[in-house]
Image (cartoon, rainbow over all chains, first blue to last red; front, side, top):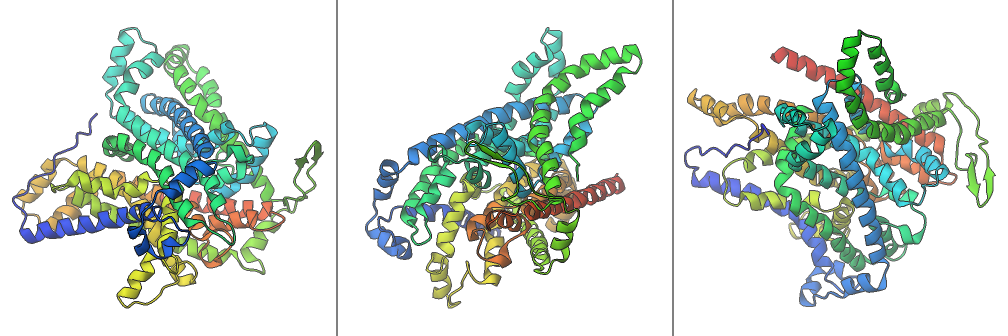
Length: 286
Length: 332
């Protein structure tokens, strides 16, 4: 772990004006960053369908009725379950697969290594549209259409290469001596990887896990195309049921949005301390 | 265009070449390499089956007149076979010089979109990272708020933006209150573009900022101290210590940013939908529209636009990497 966060340098005392400027800019940026999120939470408290047009009314009569409607009267919990299965599946498969590949690419100068790294980059360039039709055909021929596994595998194709890249950078920062010590103690290469390196790579893994989870949790294009039966819909697609051509139930949409954001934000909170170190290693060594 | 194809076969083929070498070397390398290949195998299999093979199929469709009517499909128990025919390069020619001339306006807007989004996102990300890297009271708190857009799923936050940008939304109340009048963010072609760039920036800054912050923390403090001793001003320190120190991080970030923005589907699709607002559709959403926005679905043209996107990115990346390598060479 060669990247030790350096303490910000104390460069004399900042003048009052500079200090105000610094806080002013940061506060403004933080406000812009947080406002849309806060706004959707606020709108979700308005019980009426058109309350979003009159935000001042909501403050007078905040209510949780949208939430009870979404939780009680709709298929929200089914969608939540589906999304959880797909996102967790993508996370587990994606992190395992990308970690092992990242480790191999980081440690061993095997032939084909450069090609593999370049392919990881290439897969980031694939526009949805080229793959959509062929993937649909492949999934329907293998019976994976309208299944969780099919969607998980499709998400892995975008998430895994990036995570492998990221984790390769992270493994590069773990001294090779540790691997050698493991080998001397009689561990197999897999044992070294599993028992010594993975625990040390926790920050990197946390970022990869977060990234894969978010990729799957918020994906729209593939999910709307590959999932057919109503009881398999994920949140992003299920939510669309509140919008029809003539009638958009913004209040329910807002409440659903907040409910969807909570698990993602919770996971984010768990990993956020690792984000900076995890991301950097990938960036510097990319 | 079949860039991914050699990869499926590359490691095993080269393995054979290896085995042809001197015995001692094989034994040693096999000992070292067998588990490397085993560890990469799942990735290679997934990529080969779900990226490589579909890509080959997708490229094949670009030389046909495939639509949802003539591509083989199954209705109930009846399987209807493929009936599309090969048309060679006709689809490409149609798109690039077609009478409807849809491609080039989308192309130029995609370029403007990518360049402006990446420029703004990278500079804002860098600026905020520099500010956050200082000793500020409440640093952790600011950081938490600043990364919030990344923590919440895109379709939720973009939905919130739609509420805010709507004709009777909060942003229009604001512009009305300060005398700028009413702006049709979601329907006027010019303001749609501004809105799209703004929202994409908002979505993209947290990732850039965190990555840059990590990069900043990897720059040794001694370099700054030395520069300060030599009497370098704050700007000079930024220009000659921070920027070069960040280069390994930022060159990758800019490349990824360009690729991701070029292919940014979610923001445009969720903010405007696929079927309305032609002028704001980038190539990727345009291709999606060719596919889903009409009946019959036009497989051939959608795939062709997709392949064109991919080719642009591959060519660009090649030049970019060469350029970076040359710069690094010049630096060393």
